[in-house]
Structures are given as C-alpha cells and as structure tokens.
Amino acid sequence: MNGSVRQRGSTWSYRIDLGTINGKRKQKEKGGFKSQKEAKQAMQLAIAEIIQKGELKESKKITLNEVFEEFILYEAPITRKHATIVRYQSLYNNHVNVFGDIIMSNIAANDLQKFITSKLIDDGLSNDYVKSIYNFLLVLWKYGLKNKYVLENVVEVIKPPKAYRSTSEIKIYTMDEIKQIWHRIEHTNNAHAFMLALKLGLRIGEIYALRWQDIDFENNVVHINKQLQKQNKKWCFTTLKTPNSYRKIYFDSELKKYLINLKNKQDFDKEFFGNLYKSNKILDKTSKIEELLTVYDFVNCKDDGQMLTTDSCKFISAVSKSDLNIHFKMHNLRHTHATLLLEKGLNPKYISERLGHSKLEFTLKLYTHITRGMDEQAVEILNFSLD
Image (cartoon, rainbow, N blue to C red):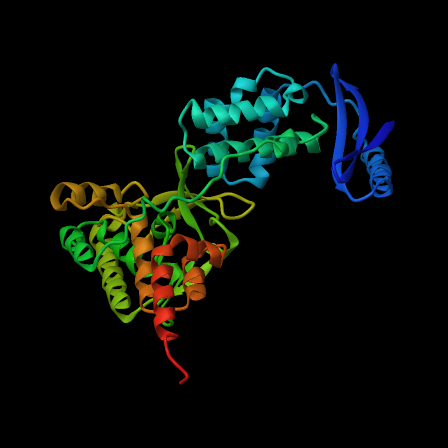
C-alpha cells in the first residue's frame, strides 16, 4: 500500500492510495499536521488501522435500493420506532430513490452534494426538511459502511443546510382563549383530553393512552409510561419518545376533583350499558413480546366505552376555528402549560422534566419568548448600586 506526505501552506498532510475499487481510484487523505514527521507517523498508524479493519476489501456491488430494503427489513425494526421507519420510507420513495439503481459505492460525495443543494434551491424545500433528508442519507451510508458496501461515508464530507427548529407555529393561548374554547367543548367527549393537555402538558399520544390504572389519586400523580399510535391500521400502545418521557406528573386539587367525577360517571355508564359497554382491542408493543389487550378503562372514551384516539381532537380544532375564530392545535396546550409555569418563575429544569424533554437546552430554546423576559427580570434585579 502506497502513501505519501506533502506540505500545504504551513501544515503537512498525508495521502494513502487504496487502489482501484469498482473502476475508480480510491484515496484517503488527512491534513493539519505541524511537521513532516508528525504527518508520516499519522500515515503509518492510518495504514495499520486500514489493514486491521479490512477496509481494502473490495466493496460489494449492491445498489442503493437493495441496501435500503435490507436496512428496513433487518435493522430498522430493531433500532428505530415505527414512526421513524415510516418517515424513512417516505423520504426514500419521494426523494432518495433517484439513486436507487446505482451501485452504492459508485455514488460520489459530489453527486449527493448536488442532490442536497437542488432540494433546497430548485425544489424550494425548507432547511429543516432538507436537513432531515441529509440525516437519512447519513443513516444509510453508516449502515453501508458497517456492512462494507462502501469504503467510506461520503455523506460526512458534504455540506448540509443549517437546520433550526421553527417556533413560528407555536401559539400560546391566552386565558381568555382557553376559557372560550373550554366553554364551547366542555360538554363534549373531547373536553377531558383538553383538560389533561392544559393541566399536565402531555403529548397527544400520551393523553389518549391514559388508563385509570395510570392515575394515583392517593398521591395526586399520573404515571406516563406509554403512548397511543396507529401502526399498520391498528391502534397500539407503544414506547415513549425518549427515556426522559417516562415520568410521573403531580396534579392539582381541581384536576383531582375533575378526574374523580369523570371516573364516577364512567363507572355509572358501565353499569348502565352492561354487556353493551364497548371493549377496545389494543396491540401492546411496549415490551419485546407483543400482546393483544382488551381495554375497558381508557380515561378518554365515549359514554358507551368506545375509545377516543389522537384523531378525535380534530373536532376541537374545527369548532374553535368555525365558532370562535381561534386556530387551535392540541399540542399548543402543551406549550401553553409550560409557559404558564415559566411565567410563574418555576425552575426550567423542573419544567423540562415535567414535559419529558430529553435536554434542558431544548426547553429553553423552545421557549425563547419566556427566557427573553427572564433576561429583562435579571437585569432589573441586578440594577442596584453599592454606593
């Protein structure tokens, strides 16, 4: 195996010739070394590592279509959530499959760079969306590198667009708006989900997965340990978004009173409907062994026991817009919940844990409108003289 070093400006670099792979010459190069000696030592270590890892083995002639299908069939079900797999399939079918019939090792970094840039400029897709395509490519090439379908991850050298989480769609409802919506829906089946979102700051899937066994009235605690999702046309209990999403949330005395009254009403309904009270078949996918459950104790259900789902809250959006001229999204009640607590001065770390966010930084970034106000408060607090 041949290698050489050379000076580039004030630093040194090395280049290793990996030979011809699938008709193309492959090289590995690295720079930034302070001296010729340092570059040579690094080159020798790199050559030894290449030989040890077997990177000189000719990459397999396999198309990107074949790599994607293999990844989706064998690795993704173990390492990714169902929603993520569905998103990968959408990204591949709608965008990435333009490379589908090409041998993966023959797809160059320049090809992918042009592709990413065209999605941003020619197709007019958002930075965030194009960044999600880039991240998906990164996943595929990491899989390809691990299985030696390629000799290097060329995605790592291309420039992705800067992605940022847009907060433009986040709406924090005023107390007047909350009351208007509540008075419109309080006698409908969707009222309970609205109340839980506002008082507990839950995600939509967490709300509709709640069973009475998850609520501890003695300690005023709700245990969040699953979410409700539709997978392959079946409603399922699935694992939560992140490990931090598994949490217990304390609730106030007013919500306790509301929930006790709701449970008493449902107990009455069960007796009233008798054998006609609905049973709900739910596939439990929260553990390694899937189990079909018959569930009678959903917190959110109709009078006859029929479960409500994440689709049900669309009713609130519809009537809020038509009757009140308020643009409503259930998830914005989660943001409103957090904002109410932040405005009252609660510790952001506690709020982050209550919401089940993976990082405190995410909470602070999401609610910059509040943290800006905290800056002003801090300046005012520290505006004193020692004279």
